[in-house]
Image (spheres, one colour):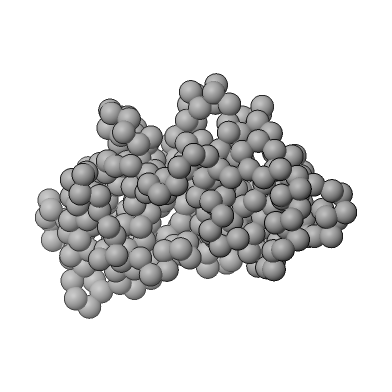
Length: 339
């Protein structure tokens, strides 16, 4: 990619996003790709009966709200106040979670684990609890168990909210077709929220990654000339950055603000992509990919294919689930659709 072509475009590395506590709360809604998600629009893979069972569990959870918007507090083992969807990435957990959020009455919130912990950081524990208190439903997508401190804070917060009548639904990722790993993930989740575990119905969802059902191979990588031509003919709002410049910039921006980096963008171009050597950089990049995927901002790149940036030792380590999810999403984002 020529320096002239790069200079003629905006850069992610020049964006310095800010996000107030109030704006964080406003962002606690499902990603725009799920704006119309409903239970009826979820298409379970009939080869995996657990997907149909998950639909039934979500429908049962929704039935816990009486007409008029008030949750029935009758003690009913069939309608516990918490629901946890445990399974591989790409099996539709976020779709089901967004469908549940859409069906809930009254004030409700939907966000990732990172977004909720960032809200606590911005408003303080008491401030975040005050904002969220009284909600009919709190949805937590991609519940993280990596940081014991953050997990304890979230467990305490969810405990207070549940005690006040708020219902809670959460998801987390396990590798697809990894026998046993899903059950271990569920056990980890319930252990970390031990005070709440008895209030959660845990549903395991098996299946193949839907993003890869119709996509073969790897993330699309262009050579320098192809990328320059793709950038030149792109008519929407686009940023062009060296991969290393983006990694350096992500280190300066809190992950909760990554979504603001993408405001108004129709695509992102990355040059000179290479295999990552720093796990810290890799985890920040995963968080950024999540926001790219939520906003459905496609990516074009040169260098190493983006699904190959995580080396084998990282893929075999403790953050394997995160990296595999990012690989799945990068393949979808670079498939060329919409570019």
